[in-house]
Amino acid sequence: MIAGPQPPPGSRPVVVVPTYNEVASLPGLLGGLLALRAPPDVLVVDDNSPDGTADMVRGHPDFGRRIFLLSRPSKMGLGSAYRDAFQWAILQGYTAAVEIDADLSHDPNDVPRLIAALDAGADMAIGSRYSEGVNVIHWPLRRLLLSIGAGLYARLFTGLRLADPTSGFKAIRREVIERLDWGRIAVDGYGFQIALHFYAQRRGFRLVEVPIVFTERRSGCSKLSRRIAFEAFGLVLKLAVVRMRDALLGRPRGMEGSGSQAQARGEGEPPAIRHQ
Image 1 (spheres, rainbow, N blue to C red):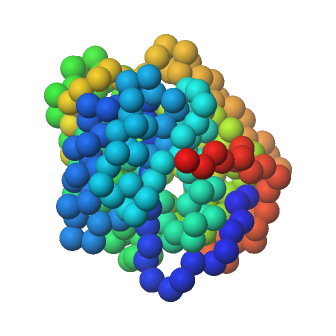
Image 2: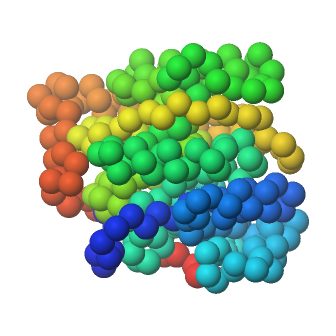
C-alpha cells in the first residue's frame, strides 16, 4: 500500500517512462507527449544508462517543469522502476499514472484515450494489442506467436479477463496505486504487468481494455531475455496457486474491496525512491 497527500480536484496524470539506453528514441517520445493538446507531466526513471539518457533528460528545455527524472544507481528491473515511480507520483499528488515504453512502440497519441477511459469510470485502462484482432506492426511471426501464447497461458492459469494480459501500456487511477498490496507484486521483469493486472482484478477494481496499434521499436534492442521469460512463466504458476487457494478457502473475487470503496490494506511498499 502507498499513502500520500490527497491531490487537488481535477485530472492530473503523470506519464512514467522507464529507461535503460534509450537516448535515441526518448526525444521522439517526449516530443510526442508534450505536443498533445493537454500535455501531461513526464517522469523518466533511468537506471544509470551508460548511453547518457539521464543527461539528455536533464538538458531538455522542459526539465523541472513538465519533465522530471528519477535517477537510480544501476539496472534494477522494470517492476522496481514502476514501483518507485508510483510512489513518487502519489507523493507529488498526481491523480493517475500512465505506463509507456520509451522505444516508441506505444503511440503517445493514445495516452489521452487511456486517460479518457479513467475519466469514464475505469480504475485501470489497458492499451490492448489483441482486443480487436491482432494490431501489431513489424513483429516477426515467432515474436507474435510468443506474445499471443503468453497471453493465453496467463489467462488460462490466472483467470485474468483480458485479451492482452501482458500489456505494458496503461493508465492507472491513483486509488489503485494507493490500495494495492505492493509486497505481493515484487516482480522486476515483464511478469510485473501480469501480477499487477491479477491483483488489481482480484481486489475488485474495474479493468478495461482500449484498442491500440503496437509498433516494433524503432531503435535499440529489446530488453526481453530468456531469464525474464522464465521468471514470468514461473510467476503465472504462483498466481495460479493463489487463485486455487482462495477458491478452496471460499474467498470470492474482490474480497478485499471494490474500486474507491476498497479498504486500505497491505504490508509492502516500494523501496525508497531516489530523487534527481
